[in-house]
Image 1 (cartoon, one colour):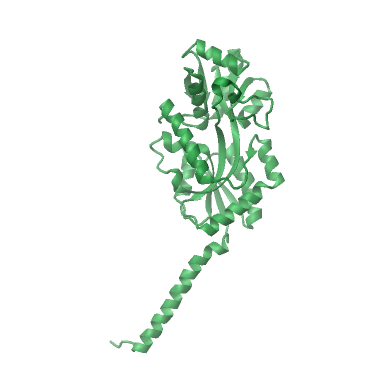
Image 2 (spheres, rainbow, N blue to C red):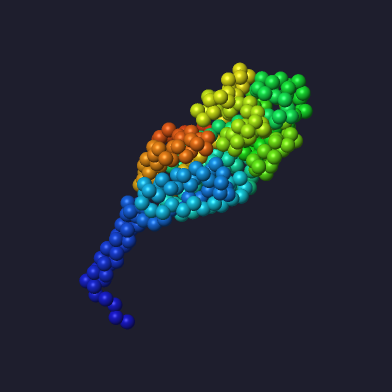
Length: 329
């Protein structure tokens, strides 16, 4: 066998080294050319809900800001956790993102052992919007104010129930927070979504329930259920006529909402994160986007929220409620 000369070997090594450096340079340069193809935003719920609306509204604006198509992929199931897991498992290249809600991002892992991901398995890009929940009473209950609700529940421990869209959802946690702070003994009735809960409230089969504000407003405005109070510390600018539960002295610590955030899988390159944050912040200042979200009952988030701090605070809040109510699936 004939081996190459020393000079030829040196030349080959030099050529291979140059090719390797070019290849590495190409890989490292990829974030600078981002995005160069369509981006998929996963939404962990069927089309038509509040998370889907947030995702589609933001996706259309991000497409304009980034100059590439943004495709919405609805991956429903397990309260948003299946879609969230898909993003956790995706390549950290910025082409698969999640528009998710507090349920699947921060709460699910606290209440279900089947959820294997954690907040740390995401790269937080930014907050999109928040929306309060609302405690409502059926017509049959005869309750018109939160004070009447508190009196009735206290005088009849264990007699009354409140419904939510499922075990471990933000709606469930909001109801448990009311029970905790009000010193109330009530039974939680989990439903498979908001629609069957609404049916039972309108049919006077359950006395009280918790809705996301956008889901409850049609029934409140029609007079079929009575709004007792919203769950953020202050009244929602969308419904200034509905008091905040925190205005009641016994419930002054109530401050919980649904929030929507743009997230990627852990390990997104910093240049990609920076581009997405810039596009997100520019999108949130667009009048058309703001109007669409606000018309749905959401409040557009302030720019440049400290996401790691925000997520840590929210998760700690949810854990306290989960531990109090001993919520486990």
